[in-house]
Amino acid sequence: MVDNHSYSFFGQKVGLIIQSASKNEPFMFFRLIKCKNDGSWEKPSSGEGKIIKFSLEEMVWILRVLNKEVNSWSSYHTFKENKTQISFKWEDGEKNKLWIHIGSYSKVLEYSQFTILEMLLKHMLKEKIEYATVSTISKKNNSDIISNIIIEEEIITDLDHKKNKELKSDSNKKKSISGAIKNETNKAVLIQFDNGSEVWVPKSGIHSEFNSSKNIIQKFTIDSWILDKNKIVS
Image (cartoon, rainbow, N blue to C red; front, side, top):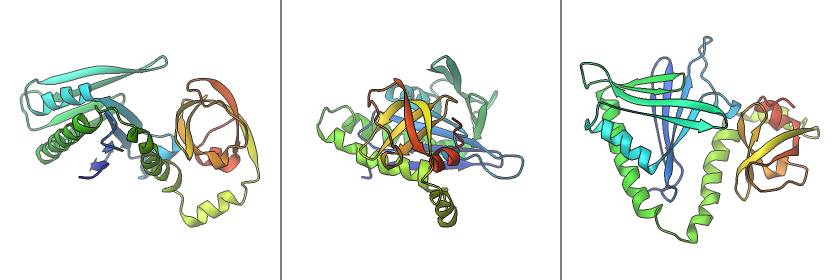
């Protein structure tokens, strides 16, 4: 039994990535990205695309639609004053196409795709019911696992060695910028900046003292190359 899952459904215009970082966490993620006019895809590491966290209860509702117990399910996710509308709905008149609408992103799944999605969600839900609903000290140690997955994806993977070398050569430059901590691991903090972007920043790239309390607006002094890479403007 593995601890994390990731599976992608890609079409010509929209990609959907299903992710669960740990069976010990009572949630999973849907990430959607679009193909740009120049043929390149949106990069989550640059704050592009849309990501939604679904709770165990919401996973059950999605499965009800996939099991065809109901024709559709819709909800809203609220972040600050922004509301994102979410819906899972069978195409009118047939049950061979499932439409997923998350904000301005829409993705249709054909039979093989929604069948895989159903099997994947059932498997993850069973795991999470068994492991994520038990109070245990070991849960705290999962931060290292989650950190490795997210940091690798959000900070490192899209930098090839040449680009990484160019950026780090300018690492002596730093910028002061406001933000609020949303999450923290042993190696990094997830900071939400004024433009709404949430970026995992390695603690080694932060050169100021900071309050680890969540949702407090404060000043961070961060290596310029990290902010430039993620298109964060001070």
